[in-house]
Amino acid sequence: MVYPIIVVGGGHAGCEAALSCARMGVETLLVTMRRSDIARMPCNPAIGGLAKGQLVREIDALGGEMGLCIDHAGIQFRMLNRGKGPAVWSPRAQADKAAYHERMISALEAEDDLELLEAEIAGLMVEGGEVRGVRTAGGEEIGATKVILALGTFPNGLMHIGEKQIPGGREGEPPSCSLSDALAGLALERARLKTGTPPRLVKGSIDFSRCRLQPGDEDPAPFSFRTERLVVDQIPCHLTWTGEKTHEIINANIGRAPLFSGQIQGAGPRYCPSIEDKVVRFSEKPRHQLFLEPEGRDSEEIYVNGLSTSLPEEVQLEMVRSVRGLEDAQIARYGYAIEYDFFPPYQIHSTLESRKLPNLYLAGQINGTSGYEEAAAQGLVAGINAVLAMKGEGPFVLGRSEAYIGVLIDDLVTKEIREPYRMFTSRAEYRLSLRQDNAEERLIRYAVRFGLLPREQWKGMTEAKRAVQRGRRRLEGESVRMGMTGKTRAARLLQRPGITLDDLEQLLPNGPLGLDRRERESLEIRIKYSGYIRRQDRTAEKLKRMERRRIPDGFSYRDIEALSTEAREVLEKFRPETLGKAARLAGVRNSDVSVLMVFIERGGDEG
Image (cartoon, rainbow, N blue to C red; front, side):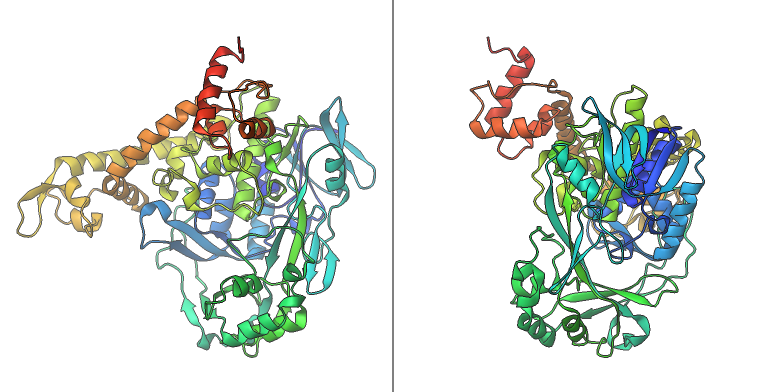
């Protein structure tokens, strides 16, 4: 049997990759070791958060499934950073893990061009230097035109709990060793990374009265623009803190922590360190915040966000019970660290296709990223590009000024990944233009073009955009009187601190604007930050000009003596596709970019 596209891995990257391929009309096979593990959340029971919420909104605008899934499975919704500027507002939702999994399974089963297979993939079929299919652990060969690997933390996964080492991709599941070894045997460079997870506690053993209540938003905003309104009975989370006793227990047992004993070799994330790492690195802090998050509406397990650890089991119990509200807590599942193989992403194009193995695409943690949202974004892009390549159409590559997804993938192919990569708002230079509220406006045209969303969705977005434009014209044309001051243009008044659109509408001579919540939010942001947005747009246009200067395939840097030695080495390794990407490589100076520009215009001819 030969399939047009095979996707290996049923996590968040694999699901979005398989769905995008099938929805673009291509027969697709999704291979996973266990169907029951599709779209699982092995770490925190949440979708979105700072910068990650923007990614989910963009996935949704491109026709992905994650936003719809969390709208269905969410048990608490919050918009983070409301007290700051709109560039960093980020939606986040606690998820019912079981409901999320079931909703994603339903989406997969609803696609006529998508087939599911339970199997372990142990190798690739390669002919003439190109990938032609996959080989199962049982020896069966399944042909394919394109193969997308979305393997998560399974490649040579090794879990650590104190001195114990347990081979596995996550708790209770075996690692995938053969496929990782097979990829390395095909001359792909691999390295090791590490991540971790906290203990889960039995809900009934926690004294929540000694913790701080953290409710959801009163009028929660959905993730998907296809969800008209959320009607949800929200479940609260709770806050508590470590204390002096907790830190004493950790310090007394630090030599048994695999990260400090030398047992773990892979690099872990600096932005989300284990509790033992936090206590050592920030010894001056008397306490660290912990979030008690339900794993589901009916689940008896509570995820202790902020207490990631790989200390021995008996130490974990002692540590947990030193925390306020957790004095009698019972541990349902112990925390652990996990090491796994990844394949440094300088080896892929911006389409996520392998540079060394044509027809092979890599998405998710196999590229060194961390997080459900980062994985899902890559899976969606890999799926779209695999189909476009099959159809002989041009690649789909988002720029840094177009989307957080563009920033994510550009960072992967232009930076050395030495620790698990996580998206932050600070990574996006144009974040004021890449807001969570305008993802649909920025990206839906691609989804409609690729057949991932019906044209009616484009029409709906266009109508909403026109409504916002009409509202803006009204505010720019109407004058209002406020207090003892004379009349002022409404738009100018809205730019003042402390003045909201709600305040202003009460003063408009022709009455309210008649906009819905999303339209009102968009209008207010556009007017309040219009000057900043214009400046950012001008800078973005300069970047686009650099991105349009493509570097020919096979361009030789070694013979250009005017380039610095470091620049030649870096450019040969990363093989940037555009002058803009070359300029962002560490070790490439402005003078090197100028030299490179001259040689590109000459076609590489030194004479």
